Length: 392
Image 1: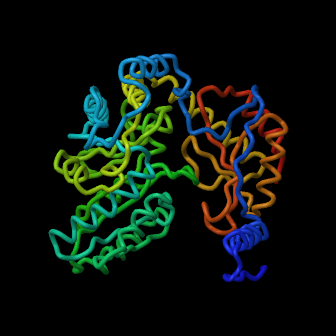
Image 2: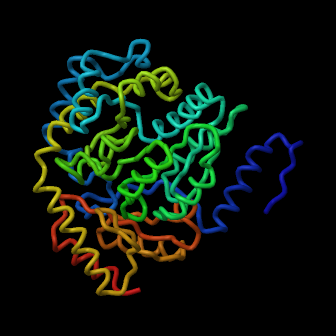
Image 3: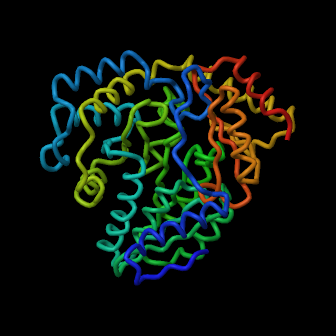
């Protein structure tokens, strides 16, 4: 690695060049991919129900823009809570069967802002930091939020339990049962990289026994699972439920569904909500339309999960390892990052788009191709991509 002399006028460029060279040497260098030509088969998108292209969402976005303009003009607490904003939140809360919903600009912003606020709640009430019991495969935004909660004098305690290992979680809860501070159990209902499910029933039992609070990220479940596509988390058992507008809903933003009191608290304490310009009217229009559509898409959900099972079956026949996937997200374990990139490029050239996921997004030695199903796919598309993949 080249040496960096801080006395040089261009020391920043030297430092950047050294860091980028080191990144390339590890095989983990990232760059924004060039858009593929039209006509490709998309197996990388999180737009699972193809609502981003739905006429109802597009028309609703146009109408909101024509009525209110293209910009939000400020934060929700200043000028950005324009006419209709709260109605969209109320409609989504009704869809999720929760008391309230608070709209953030993204799932990342929500998780990164809410966890420090919850730590502050624990500090104010118990004069002790919060304890965050987190699945090892929780999304990076949750990890970021937990890490941010360690700033200042009341540093949150972060305890990571092995992926979907409720016995390990129980041992951590038991160990900390006398520790002061609010205890939060955090996980995803459908995991974004492995495509498997959390054992929500077992988590509820542990939460009840140890007087903890459940925080479930439903980014990849909302719209696809549960009654009317409302997700897997039961609002009578889970205190905080995060749903994103950028996956099955085909838009942007994220709703934190909770009690009215929690909503009021986050309006006052979640920094990302307080200090960000709110989402523009076009996004609110599309979210309103998507919320209205989701309960009526049972046929589309059934087709999507049928395609996912067909793909898993054919992968197994060829000898590929798809880990523990049981959803629309299907990883194909490659292990070697460079091989994952080569296979992705091979698929791209054949007209298929998929993601090559490498550390640190996933643990070391688990580089993979990440396939996601969407309702625009046909059975023949699945068969064709299997042919290109071949055998391990």
